[in-house]
Amino acid sequence: MSAAPHEALAGATADEVLAWADRTFGKSAAIASSFGVEDVVLIDLAQRHAPRLPIFTLDTGRLPPETYDVMEEVRRRYGVAILAYAPERAAVEELERTKGFFSFRRSIDERRECCGLRKLEPLRRALLGKSAWVTGLRREQSVTRTGVEVVETDAAPGGILKLNPLAAWSEADVWRYAREHALPVNALHARGYPSIGCAPCTRAVAPGEDVRAGRWWWESPEHKECGLHGRGGR
Image (cartoon, rainbow, N blue to C red; front, side, top):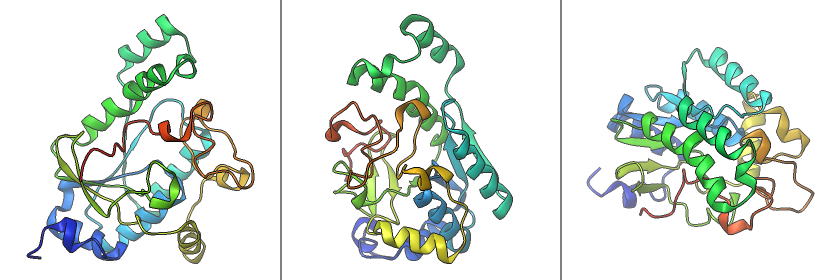
């Protein structure tokens, strides 16, 4: 591939993006998964087209049990290890000791502090030494993700490549694939949770609401990111 990956893969299919990642990076790239339906679709595609890529998750300590159920189903179905990265114990204990157990609901800054401890710091460890990471981000998911590109340069984890093979997929595309391949699906999806994060920060959405309306529902839509997927890179 002579052109830069940003241009060469811009119109590529998810299969093609994953196969390129496998050829180019192998185990030096990794799939990030929070085990919503998009991420399980991504894992299934990767098992077919990029089997060398390891899978990691950020175990914040506050995930709903239904998410762990999917993790275990995926682990058994594909015979793969799920590399779980937990937050630093001392930092979480200090936050809860000094600010309580729901400080993240008091302000955007305090919510970002909690996300920083439970997600961003573990993500830095997960990506240490990696050349690229692969996510299930889609443009259709929210107002904060409409500009998602198939290939981006992610400034936050040190300028590594970030690949979003499902960027152009619709919600219907995702569910069609999940049904056709009988994939394990988080039970919360059927209970009105299109987007699933930590249990205290996620609620069901009403018909017609944005798919991420249930995430940090006390905040305005343009703030609804934890920092994992900043829009600073190309």
